[in-house]
Image 1 (cartoon, one colour):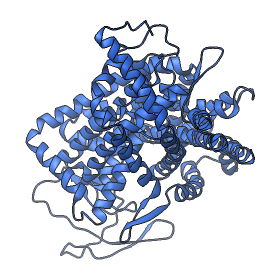
Image 2: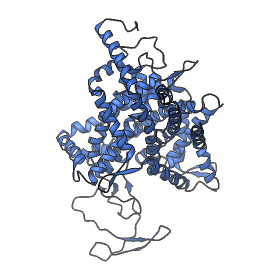
Image 3: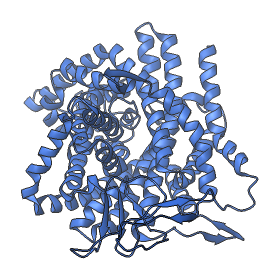
Image 4: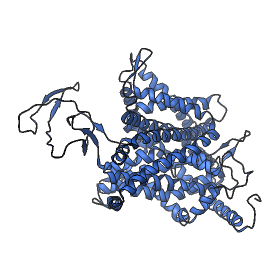
Length: 587
């Protein structure tokens, strides 16, 4: 029990982290530079957390891979083989189950199969599919796409296992509300296997990491990328906004607006969240996929070359060197971030489904990785490769001089430059205060000296995807901006529910106001996500997220016999209904 008490104490620290940040910045007279100061406070914490979670081991020469990634890949491959490629064999059965064919009307639960699917999809089909793919391809090259797809195909069976267990070990309280997820099958399932104490400790650890993931991956990352899209595509919330005698950063204001809107929805709980996501998710996916298909079909002659780039990049050059390793790591990491298979988060939403057969929802759940990664992420990657945006790091135009202080860019595209134009480049020194002090002789034959401030648009994350679509559909970034808001919003409200269930598991209803305190904390971090740098937001999101995976996957291996038994039971149930041997209401 001492270990459990220690973990609960860690949870308490997590709950007061926003106040710690508030104290650290309370001495400022004006919020000038607020974003930078806040980002600096996050950086120290994030660096330590990231180093702990992503411990690396050498796999080829000097190249190292995080242990958690190896663990995740091995799990996906093993589960797929163990269940004899269930992801392929049972895909049709999964579709029929999602339509409600095998579920009686009086089944216990709160939401339908389709609503559970869309609620979980809203947490996965989000900015990970838009900006996450761009990050993976931008760092690991087109080959990262291949590994994202492989992760998704193997992850389908992993998702089936965890969501089956989520329903199997869920709890339904006196008010009819369902509570489920990784923490429940960790505690109850392992207890049945004689590992009660270990299961209890792992369940508490999982719940704490789930709260952290809800705040990081499901909240801060979403708001961060939505803020980027609003500022760079619409020119909104760039300048400081004067309010009550203070000049507030525009990003801070935008984050506050998002926090208020999200807060108004998450108060309603899973039923309201499911209703909202069942409408938003199909609309968002439809609009985004249509835009991608327009570009793909408009450039059909380039599609074979794009797939070739993806396949060659996955095994190239580099095949046993840095290129391969980079593509592999980025593909697996961003693929996992996209579909969440093996992390125990999706079972929280799927546990609320109306069903008497746990494996029925497990089969419905395997549709998720296929939809969000194999379909949506692949389309995004094809657009990035076809347009060449995957290899663009920065943008400027003919009226700007490419002299700047900022992130290094390997490739820069200069818009509106006439064919045959000549470019001159200069070198500069920079004073300690950041001002240019001296400019050296440039590349122009004439001995001229230039001093200039260049307007450089660094292309990363969502900005890269937006740029890719803009090359073929100039009007699309506007639509993408709206889609990004909806993607971010739906992901936030679904993940807020995941975190809420973790809080309830840790504290129950014994502590008055704890759930409300969590929801308020969630909204505070929405604001922090808007002003933090993408680097820090990605690091904290990945670290918390992958920390959930370790205890969850351990439980999946221990409870495989339970999953296998439930699958056999449901397959017989479905076969009897299909053959007419019994009615859906008979069971």
